[in-house]
Image (cartoon, rainbow, N blue to C red; front, side, top):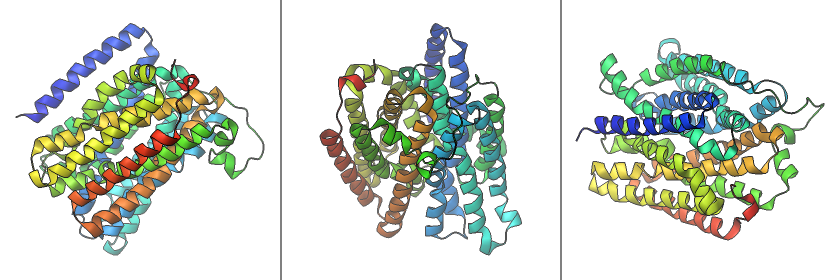
Length: 429
C-alpha cells in the first residue's frame, strides 16, 4: 500500500473543505490567521518530530544528555508568560512573533554547526545551549498565535483556525519524503537536515507574520510589577475561579503521559524499525484536521467537560493500542496508535485554550494563553519529558511503559470526572 499517496489524498480533501469554509466566512482575515498557524506548526514539526531519533544517532551523547536536550521544549514554554506580558503591555503581537521566529532560525543554524565548530567533549553543552535558546524563542509562539487569532476572530471559531496549524504539522511528513528524495538521503529523519529546514521555514514565517493584522497591546503600561505578574499568576487571582484552578491541575497531569508519545514517539518507532517515522506519526495530524474542524460543534453540543473527557479517553486508547503493537509488529497498529492524536489534542488541549479564552477579559488574552502554555507545555511537559525519559532508560521495555502511562491516564480521567465542573455559563455559546 502506498501510504505517501494516501496522505496526499487525505490532505487534499481536507484542504478543499477548509478553503470552502473560509470562502463562506467571506473574511480575508481568516486566511491570514490560518497561514500564520500553518507556518508556525510546520516549522516546529519538520525538525522536532525526528529530533529524538537524530540524537540517538549521535555517538557522543549519553542517554541522560539526550533527555536533557529533549526537555528544551518544556523549558522554552517557561518563557511564554513573559512573552504574554510583553504582548499585552508593550509590543504589537505580530511584530513580536516575527522577531521570535527570526531568532529561532538563527539558533537552529547554530545548532547544526556543533560538529564543525565545537570540540567533541563540549558538543553536549553546545547542543543544550543552542536548542534551548531556539525553544525559548519558539514555544511562547503557541500562546501568542492563539491570542492573535482569538483577538481577531470569535474564540469559539479558534479550533477551525488552529486546524491550519495541524495541516502545517501534517505537511512536514510530505516535506520529509520530498526532501529525502531531493537531498538523496534515505535516513532523512535521522540526519541534521531537518534542523536546517526548520530554520529556513522560520525565516519565511517571520516575513509572513509582518503581514498579519495589527494586534497592539490591550493594557496600559504599568509601573513596577512582581514575579506574580511576570509569570501570569495574576490571572489566577484575578479570576478567583476554583474550577479554572482544577482545570489547570488536570491539564498539568494529563500532559505527563502525553509526552511519552509526543517526545519519544520517534524513538519508539525507530526501535520498531519503522522506515517513515514522521509520516507514521503524522497520521495523527490527519485525524486532527477533522476533529479540530468539528471541535466547535462538539463543545456546543457536549460542553467543555465531556469534550475533554473524550480527549483523555482517546489518549488511553492510543496507549493500549501501542501496547498491543509492541509484540505484533504490524504497521497498521502503529497507524491506529497515531490516529487518536487528533482527538487528544483537539478535544482536550485546544478545548482548554477556548475554555481559558472564554473566562478571561480581552486585555488579558495573551497573558492568559501564555500562562496556560507555561502550565501545560512548560511545567507539565518538563516533568513528563524527564519522567518518561528516565523510565525509557531504566525499564527499557516499551510494552511496560505503555501500561504505566495508561494507568496515569486513567487517574487523570478519574480526577476530571470528580473535580472539574461544567456549569452551563462556561460552555461555548
